Length: 253
Image (spheres, rainbow, N blue to C red):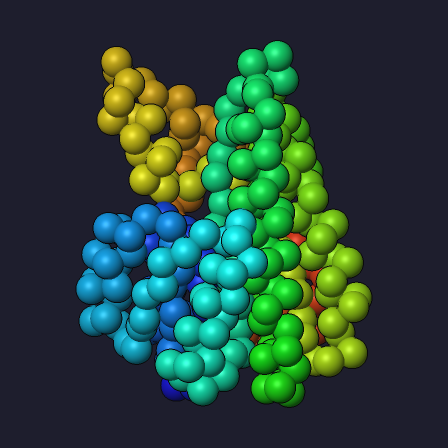
């Protein structure tokens, strides 16, 4: 029996990268899963691939919209009869110094990475309470703990995610709802791979990426997904308001 047997799950940003890996691992562990994403083409392809692993439905939408977030949550309830687990994975990055960062990019990063969790969780809470409890996994980052240059918007957004997670964990614990943050380090997502593929010297770029963490390699998305499975399942039954860093030792420095 899988660790999420019979659980009904929503994964935002589930069409690619870490979100896709989480959805696949959850399906393999018995969860019925809705993946949500803004990219309709990637979403359709992901649903087709993930269907081989279990019961999955795809919903297009933008987590920055309260209306869209409501549709994502309602899709799980309509399709599977309730909601047990929410993984707030949708997010965007920003690599730009404050001198070159404009208001539109700042707003987009904070709206997606922080407000995008508020909208989904706000809609999810009544259903989690109705199920007698559940789990919420937010996606933070190693950059919530250690700032890097030319990333003020991203650093700020992920720092906010950690405190948001801790705050709502205290509010929701009385309902049997656990809330924890998964904080990955450098991971071989499609975005990271594109940096390699589009560079003048792909081998050099890949080697530079591998030196980011003390473990001298980049994580596979499935390694990060295993952390999400731990936080979503009863394996982490005494954890709430916690932050699980999977960063290859980056923040230890």
